Length: 268
Image 1 (cartoon, rainbow, N blue to C red):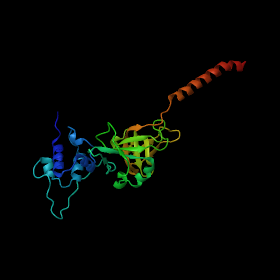
Image 2 (image 1 turned 90 degrees about the vertical axis):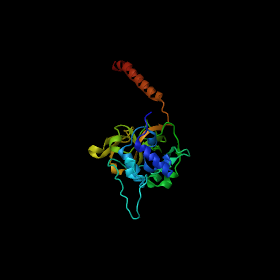
Image 3 (image 1 turned 45 degrees about the horizontal axis):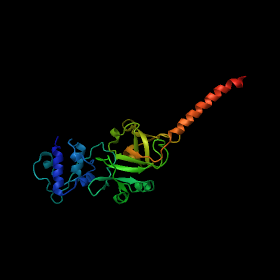
Image 4 (image 1 turned 30 degrees about the vertical axis):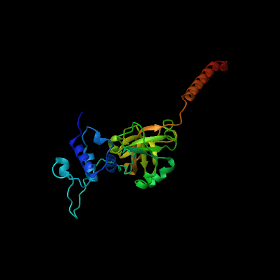
């Protein structure tokens, strides 16, 4: 079995020294859950997140293993913050819910709370007041549940369904054409849409509904977006009967046959 990277070992050493649990580490830094247990290395973004969050870490120790884990900061000394990578869009959720075992729960935003979600964006007290749950198979990431309002995605997702999204950070590259996302924006609130990603080309996302007869597509600029969540699963309660469609097709076929058989009589 491949061992974890040296940088990850040093992060774990630092957390042990400070008495910080991994769940708290993921919550503080915004790094995806489970990263420290994986055999892969650390991205530059995650290194920057760690150093920006825990400012008493000695960079010389972290990168070379030399010196003390914590640096000595003299009184009055100002710490320069490591610049964040340019490609990060939006702010990582600052509040997550953690179970007594240290596992991250999934916060749910029901329709009655969605106005408050926008007004209290980034407000820890409000977010902590929302219900939270654990869902099987959804691990190693930050997820959120949104109750769907309206019929724009019908019949794929009906009003009242629960859409479960995973935090999407790099909008320019990670938002894929015709995939479904939960978009939280200043103007439209919380919407579930298929996206066409043209951020690099036109500085726009194009949001498409599945019910396009009633809900036309429209563009939205990244600066108007607060959060993007990639739809991972949904809880559907309105199960459409496909027999209704088959009955309509069969009825239409019968009518056409009736017209064909009666037309000669009418012509006579």
